[in-house]
Image 1 (cartoon, rainbow, N blue to C red):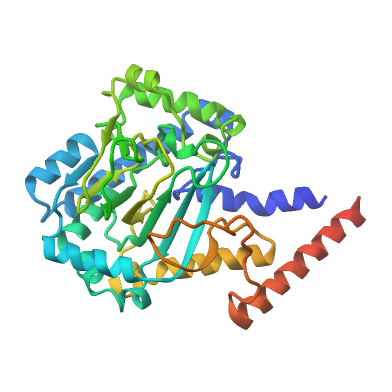
Image 2 (tube, rainbow, N blue to C red; image 1 turned 120 degrees about the horizontal axis):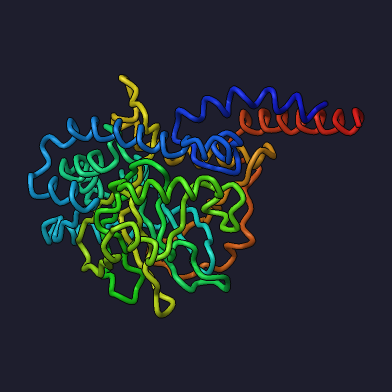
Length: 383
């Protein structure tokens, strides 16, 4: 009875998610439906998302230098070496080196990723970083690649390969982040060698070819039961021989010097290159992913002064979900730390503090927990 009631209440939510960027074949039984995907649900959503993004990109590409716009349209990425003048880069690097403060970390396989949110509080002490984020070309390229006129999420990101004992990093396998165009950008603060986790991308794989569409349909039919957890959640993993069969060229690796910007549509196939040894890679990292089918006519996140508060808001919401028993916060708090620190001691034992949300968060989370406990007891009583 309880299960049927819950299913009925969830149906409208699952249906509405078809018109958003929701991608998990395991969490939404409509997205993961074998019958619906055999009839083309997944590839229809993908085609509609790509058409809508292409329409928005025609407007967002205005002001992007023609060679960069042409390179992105052809390859799905652009690389801009020496993005900042030497003096500006030196100041930016000094800003990052001197900064010590709160951060978040997560573990994937044997790799630790650390992120420092570039919110207005942090940027107040980083004049060089503010100048980077305010550069018009950076904003125009991220908007073009993402197909959204929106301020992306900005972080200082540290990648620490082989920092802990675990399985291989799942990001080493070629994959598409989701079914629709989306953007990630990396501005290198350290040199990235061929054996130090370089970015890898399959040129042109942001374009959905007929062979790719057929492969996507086959994957969508089986995805909900896939043994690969990330494939089941909508980030399809792929091998090089399959990429070749789709007609794409071989993956390309990008060992890059510091002060290089790379912006990519990560709806195309990409991966993190393998690192030979334990090491460190530090960069300014940008990300944006919204509803691929439509963009709101009024979007407050377009305003940098507001958009740059999104990261702490998202992290606080994730903390609240965990405190309420509704989810798990994978980005764990990491006290005072610097971007170039290699120490990851204590990460695995980190817990979300129970006062992270202040008293409104604690009260609301407590009410949610009590409600869940009541429903659980009622379910047991019904049976």
